Length: 204
Image (cartoon, rainbow, N blue to C red):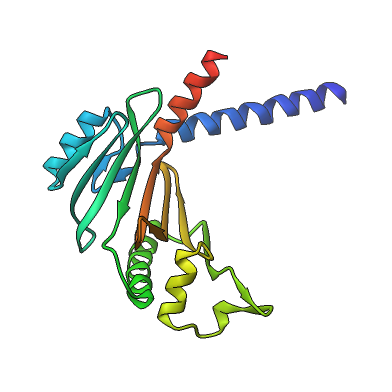
């Protein structure tokens, strides 16, 4: 009986390992605007310029470009590499700044619908105001646009939808940074993140 249990355990472990190897073999780089998120910063910037974006600036581990994306004009695109490797793994899109909450939410809803159409059901979603007034949930109070913007500016607003795919993760959110309120879209490539993790493990 003991030998049977050990054999069964080894068989299950072998199947699990084979499944993991199959998933890794099928995995590809996450794509942004049809371009796999891979290569050095310089290589990827060149591909983004070919795709129609204009280079704004380049630093040691990131570059900023500008252009049209997903039907929106003048988006800011940030391409980031993982330290210490010159290997692109994250793309950040900042959509045009908005002054009204209704405009922010409209942009967010439009993009969320398109992402659901392409990637399916979200892996996570939180859309709420975090601050309470006299113990009341402000999300159900019909707040005016100005009040909602103020909650966002004071970090009392959590508004995001996440998508988990075989090749990486995507996160849509409403953000406030440098006096601007905008919708943000982040792409995280899984293969290159694994590569950097493996290098760190090899150093141990």
